[in-house]
Image (cartoon, one colour):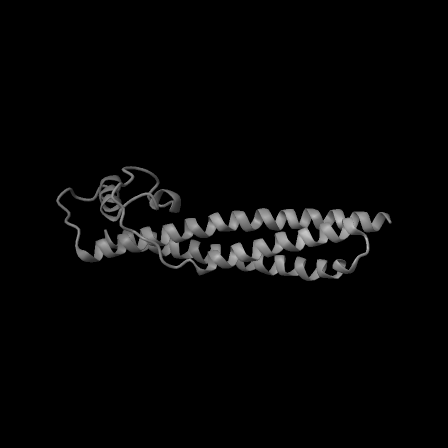
Length: 167
């Protein structure tokens, strides 16, 4: 049981690192967009000024969203209700379990002996797995928000460049 739990935890830790790397890239790209469009703020055309300012605002929202996600470290793992089944390796499914329900599901799905008794180490690993899964869920949710605003910012940027190219 412990080896299974350690393996799942290691997979989730790798996924958390991946989510954090995605946020770092998003921050870098959004910062680049802010720096690029800061030069268009001096434009005399009010429409270009408006689009540039909106692009910068969307980029700032993207950066803020990514920073919020990078700061997510702790979550509550005490949950009264628990999922009873689901993919025991997927962070979305794991985040819906409480630690006892997760241990019972692993025991059932992976055919551990019915007489197997969970010890404190199993419970601690289960709590850590669920907490990590919730942090990952939080990080990926904020990544989607950051990506949406970065995309909007880039679309506005392309419009500004096209308008200026046609002038």
